[in-house]
Length: 278
Image 1 (cartoon, rainbow, N blue to C red):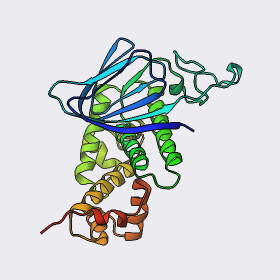
Image 2 (cartoon, one colour; image 1 turned 45 degrees about the horizontal axis):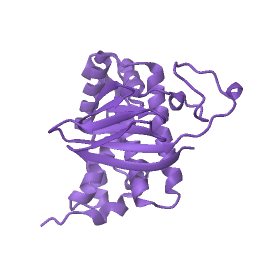
Image 3 (cartoon, rainbow, N blue to C red; image 1 turned 90 degrees about the horizontal axis):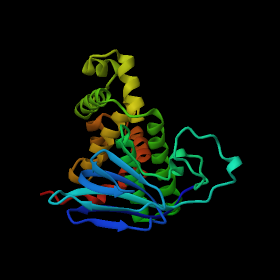
């Protein structure tokens, strides 16, 4: 279990931070909008939306906003744990692995930064957003829940690192399929639909989407529906049943289950956040 120490959301055009001796904390940076830049171990990393940066403990770095460019990002920080005896560690498949962390996740044993434009960015973004929500609201057992969600995000990131870099062509295909889902999420979407979108076989389209993003077609559809429903719960006058039907759920109880699974709470909890609409 990770021992989280801080979760924050940076935004603006004047962000800057640095450490010359190396931070005592590990950190995960998920850029959600705009651009910013990091120098880690004298290596320059320009982060754009979809980019994720893992900085291990003990590594010197500094980062700053790019002049005139607004950016937002989530940053999760945690204390590294001590490793077991070297002979009890599992065999590793990556270079630059050290026995600094007791966890078996290879990513967490790196001594150098890891920078990825993640195909599973949407999944990681949602998990980290929930981490920040739990950390801010502090419900019962929030530390355990936040640490669990963060570890889940790291596992997906590690799996993508294991698979290797996604080719530009595959990125393009996946983006086209995601755009199709964002437009047509209210109806049933099949692998045949996505195969037609990228002019590939249905099986290839479904496999590619899951391999790159870490999600099935139905998981992408549910995610888009819940995003829209969340917006409508705060910005419309429709009731929960009407919103459920609008986004594609004929069964309200099923909508409740899916919403709670994605958001961690039922839709009724956010009705009080509605704007005053004349």
